[in-house]
Image (cartoon, rainbow, N blue to C red; front, side, top):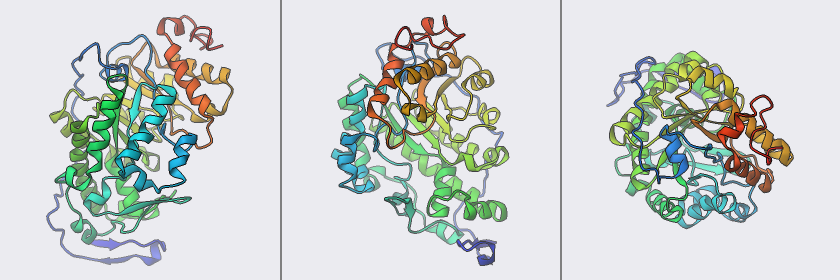
Length: 405
């Protein structure tokens, strides 16, 4: 049974049947996850973020920021005001420049390529554009089995996404071991929800209708996306990415039970396949809206668990234990505060994360309008942090030496 879903609510539903062609109906079980295998330590000369993501101890937490290449930077706006998003992200010279701007300005320990979670979708037949003031808009949403049968596999990323190799190879060369190069993807759930809705929607009305009335279709689409993303992650690593983050940007739309059925198993499918080929490459799993799902996320085999700003770091450390690498999770709105407050919040976050096994980040992307100097203060506070100093001052959470006060 297949249903066409429109935006007009339940009264606009049309239901009919036809066979599903060439799609596996195997659905991964939420509990069917493999035990996480720690990465064997690499070279001590590797960049700090890479070493900590592997689970190694360090004297201070590495730092980078989600959406660190963004419109809060004036030199970034010189490009965003002139060129559309896909032109910027798919033109290697521009994408390389935008990726390097925050690294030159703030020297974070991670450089993430300028791209988008939706970037691989056109390669499988789902077209999108980013419309100013509206965000991503998908012209051909995937809502029926017929739509699903039209999708392609990602057989040759060098052919269908030719810009990725040049961007990542060039960034790896430019950074030259002074920082860790990060790639990223959206999780199967997040890409499915985006491409079913066709746009950002705070209710996910169409996707939730499908989830409740035709879950088999959703599982089949998630499985297809997982297989596509396995190829895409491996391609990014082959092109030079040293760490890859999985963004489950729309996990907050899911209850814990829905997350355990429709999100985590498919992210785990990606992680398991990538780890089978590249066991030495750390993978980060970041779920936006992870509050209420932390216990479920302990079963993830990702090397690093990313936390959003609404999660209490101390609670997360208690739940995940002392040996799990955590990432996050200062509220990015603190970047609008004065220098003293930013440094205190950084110190408190680092102290709550414990003695290491932590990558400092904001708990959501840097917001447009954020003062550039404050991003520099955030990165500087991490560089000046020392675990011995921080944990000598755990009562007031201000232990990043005199600069924190």
